[in-house]
Length: 174
Image (cartoon, rainbow, N blue to C red; front, side, top):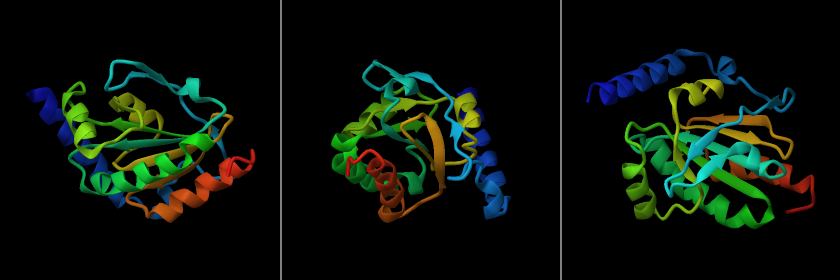
């Protein structure tokens, strides 16, 4: 119980700290300065190994989120739509939930919301490696495994879609 409360308090403090930063300072990554995406190995909600490096050659959108976050929940239909529309063209979406439980809540939530893209429970360390100091935080990774854009907070579908299409078009997949 203490660990669960500790994680919620930590996430709340990180979110408050993030909100106090000027918008221009929040962006750790930009299109002009692509940086290698930190690799990770997680276990998804079905018990399978989820490794970022397995998706090299694909466009990947990593979504740091939480089931208790209203903006994250509002984004689910957008991400589902993008995944359904572009998965056959080379897009992978990976949902990394910052949750205390080891997947049971997440598994029920995914079933209830009919989420078909991979989901796993992340760690504080992984979130810090990506500079994801609040949720939702999304990172767009090109086919070479580099972070080319990040999206902090709620975004409309068109914002994601424009960036995704641009990366997919570089290989003629759109």
